[in-house]
Image 1 (spheres, rainbow, N blue to C red):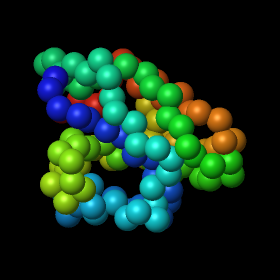
Image 2: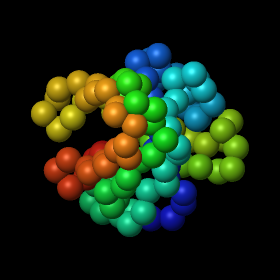
Image 3: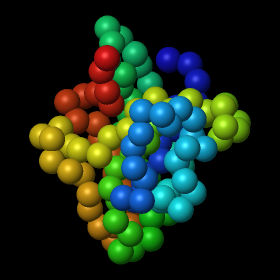
Length: 115
C-alpha cells in the first residue's frame, strides 16, 4: 500500500462527523501526542493492516478517547481522513488515561479496518 498513512490519538473533544473529510477537521485542541506513520501496510481483500506501533508524546493524565487515521499529503487541508475508531474489538469504548509512557497500539483481529 502506497502513501503515508498516519494515526492521531484524540480526546473526547473530537466528535466524529460524516462531514469531516480532511485532517484539518480534527481540531488541534483535541489532538494528543506525536503523529505516527504506519509501517508494514497491506490492503488485501478489503482488509487494511499495519504493523503495531509505539505512540509517543501523550502527557500523563491525558484521556485518550479514540484515534483518527488519514493519508498525509503534506497539508492538513488535503490529507483525507480514512477512519475514526473509538471502540475496541469487543465494542467497548477505548477511552483510557495515559501515564506519560509510550502507548503501544496493536490492531485487533489482525486488521486496522475492513471494508
